[in-house]
Image 1 (tube, rainbow, N blue to C red):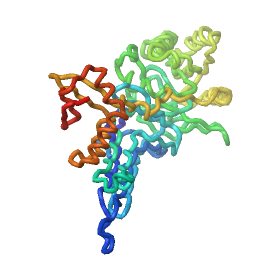
Image 2: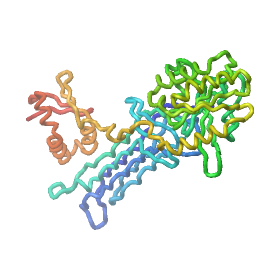
Image 3: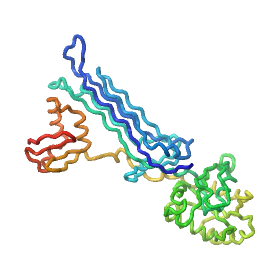
Image 4: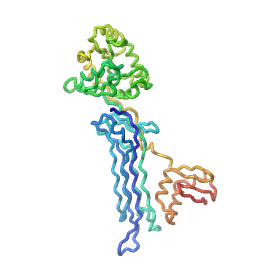
Length: 422
């Protein structure tokens, strides 16, 4: 089975917590703090593996989690960092954020790596919070949370040349004739249910990758037939070979088919419709084809579409067509990235805190609050003083005043509440 679009959830590892510890040695009765830092959480890293061709591995496994960092230990020992989680994907994989639809990664080069969920930083041990007046801090910092998100993986086949056309016009036969690929071939519509790739060797030192794209029908840009599922596979191609049934064997008009397919391409993507096209007038071995081939040449060559008379069944006429493909590829620029990638880290930036008023209580939430509560011991006097100073330093006190807080009003941070006193 060919799978080319999946949704998965990724979670980077959390940072290990900082340690609260004090030296305990035989001749040092009142040793100072020696709590070590927590290790950093592992990242989730996507890597392009050229040996993969589908997203089948993600069909049944949907959740991926990197290893968390270890907690710090006594004697200033830092916890071990969590290992990165490596997720291998085939070339041509585009990763989108499921919530925003933004492109996080366009993975097309073998060996290309992209961190899409960053591990949390390890928390600081209590040794970092000792001062001349606070010599025995009984608090440390929790490790940071690893990033997590739901992403959509889309596979867009990477090929220099794409074969397009209505079903049953001979695309698969052409691919099998020109390459070592062996697609399933039969005389009925939609024989090709998945894109097939093959390497065309024109002559020594000259080759290119060709993709047989499943047949496009009217309404494909709206998802009719196999349309939307496979139109994405020709977005990366540099040239389109438009295969037409010159014989009209099914009562079709090849010139009319040409315009219908291009209408579907244009409706799906204006940029895709502008790709250079070469016309392969197939089934030319059938007597009825000659008149249609002349019509195609008269109508399309003045528009810049070269028409080549070929027969996939007899493997004839492909030499001049392939020479033209090689010539055009040499002049065309390398394919661009699918879309501009967004900065994964900026995507996760949040306001440091937010204040809302509910039932007379002032609720303070946000990453700044989580981080602050994760590094204080509210049962310890020195830690509580540190907490109060940080409230002012972070601007939370000023923001509460702007919200109109009065003495005696309740302020709640997660599960902890206190009465406000200015």
